Length: 428
Ligand code: HSE
Image (cartoon, rainbow, N blue to C red; front, side, top):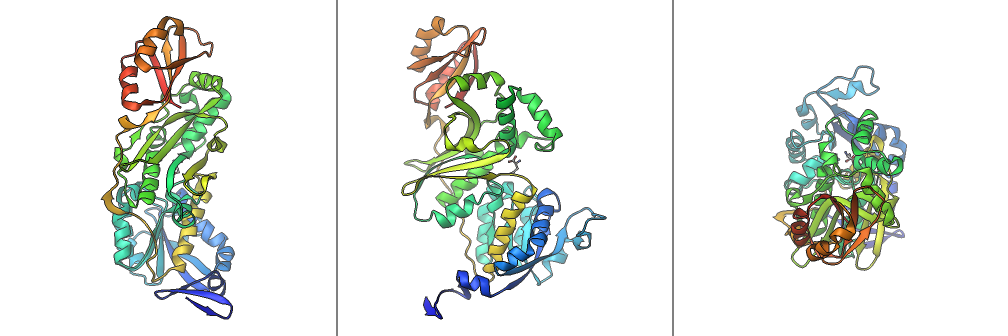
């Protein structure tokens, strides 16, 4: 490090990084965008419409190519559309590739080839990052380029960069996230309007919030991939998303909300992880959370991530977790960072070694249970099966609710599966 003309210059390989440097030297960048769907077209809009803002940060960035199978007659950027990836690959002027294709192939092959050709890649593709992130990060390292994926978790919320850059002096002890906008929109509507799941899902599909095939969202797989990316990032090892216990929101009804309100709670799809003795515990499931829980600020399509770390304590990150421009903004933010680090491999990530994930049966929760009949007729049997229980009266005919104390998931499931007249359970 040297002091020169009143500024600190930190020399890392060939790159000189200071805020002053960023403002004074303009890097000229040509980018290619792979996929011209919702996020891809958003990326082009952000780069071109906010070119002046990006230039003020020292990067003169423009889109040279858009790769898509389709043509877009009448689109202001139709002349940039190409159908052959090799055209991008063989153009040395293109230094940055923004991948917004979704799915693992051909996104993986294109990202790999781009990095092998010396281009850095940024993406919003959570399926690809959760599945093949470690491999792509290794390819980036070998080729002295970078692979960034901020938009893959929490859409426009800069949560990954915060974990990587801002919270580097913190032991991250636990993270709770509302990481899926579609399910949060559905649960918020169900709560506010007393509507049932199927009706709200249909409306969300009509409005274009939910996909025509909404399985990945409503069954929790999307949130699961996102929490797997978070666990990988904080543990520096690959978290296998398929090993994370995942439950979606399809069994939640308007009656569950009545009980939640009696308890001063609401219901959210929570993706959670925490550090354990052996590794990490992670789970995605509906939870009855306290209405005062700061994460409950996320209503509708918004996302929120509550991080608990040893020095800072709780910190909350909130914003639009989905949508064209918020997601694109995160991808372009990565592209700007990539432009600042040409020829310098800096991106952090995780290795292919798998992090130990505790079996869900070993985790402890309190539970809410709904059951047919009357609490008074079942109290003794419930205590024998679940230990300490407390009734919850939502004045629903022919049924009752109760909560348990903290119990191991394995013991709870044994008792719940043997329960006559069971209707539903939700973890608190
Ligand atoms: N389907 C996702 C959601 C999109 O609803 O949150 C953003 O990853």
